[in-house]
Image 1: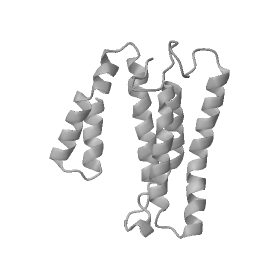
Image 2: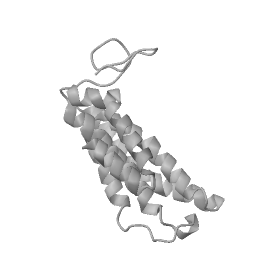
Image 3: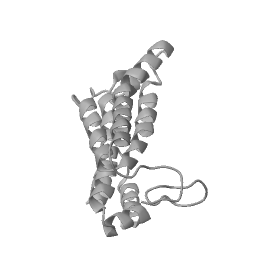
Image 4: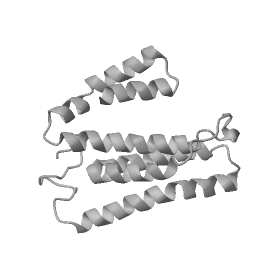
Length: 168
């Protein structure tokens, strides 16, 4: 299902059929996806990136049709706030959803890059602030809640620095 969604999205974004098929094949063969399906926490492993990438895509779509970006069609109405909700669902699914905040920042920076310098910084800050506030609130709630916290060291649900893998 995730592979079919990736193929559909890649086709909609203008990739050729072969490129979309290869991207879908890479999605199917990815060890992270294989492990997600074979693991006990399958739902959180799949739902977190699904909502995270949906959030990035919705942020992209919320301004993709700007005339100043050279595109003729207007941006879709109402894509920005569902992007915030999708990031919230990603974070609530799994704490690794935090990684989507930098992706959203990069997409937002790319979208405002054609604006004038003062407007660029202002639009970037306004665009990224709800996502940053949401992520900080999640981190505060997560740190105040019960349960294991990510940290440094050998304990369960923690990771050490160096050439090792994250353990969960």
